[in-house]
Length: 194
Image (tube, rainbow, N blue to C red; front, side):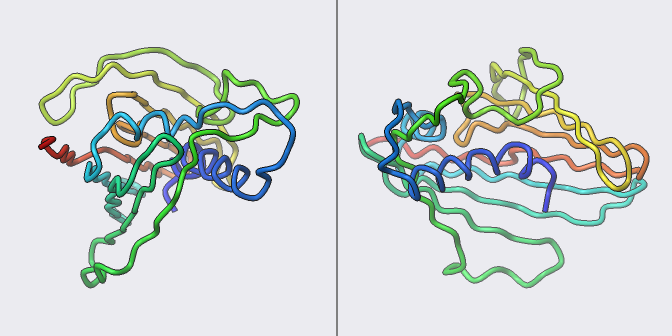
C-alpha cells in the first residue's frame, strides 16, 4: 500500500467510518473536507492518480487509482474508486469501491477542527504553486515524519481545493532503504455542464 494512503487517505477514511458508525454522538457537527471538495465539481468528474514505488532506483510497483464523482447533493457525495496494477490483467469494470461521504460529521470532544482533513504528524507546512497537466494549482503542502522498520520516513503531500480529491502529489522517502513512492495526478476529466 502506498505510504501516502496511510498519511493522507486513512485519516479521511477514518472520518467516513466515524460519521457512519457513531451518528448519534452529541458533538459539534462540521463539514467533511472531502464533501466540501467534491461538491464543487460536476457529477462524472474523474481523476486518476499514479503511484510509483522505487527501491534503489528500480520500479517495484505501479498502481493507478481512478476516482469518479457518482452522485452529489447537499447531504452527501458518492465517489467510486477503481484500481489498476501494472503488470496484472486489466481489472474487471465491476470491481470498484464506492464510498458515501456525508456532508457533516461529529467533531469529537477535544478534537481540533483546524486539523481535520490534514495529514497526521505534520512537521512542516507551507504553500506552493504547482504546475500539473497544463494548469497551475495553488497548493498547501504538509511534511510529516515517521519511523519505519527500515528507518525514518518523510512524506510531503501537496493539497489543493482546486483538485478533485484534493491530493495533487505526494512523495514518501525512506532513505535508509533507498525507497521512494511518488503519487501524482496523471489525468483529470471534468464534464462540461449541459
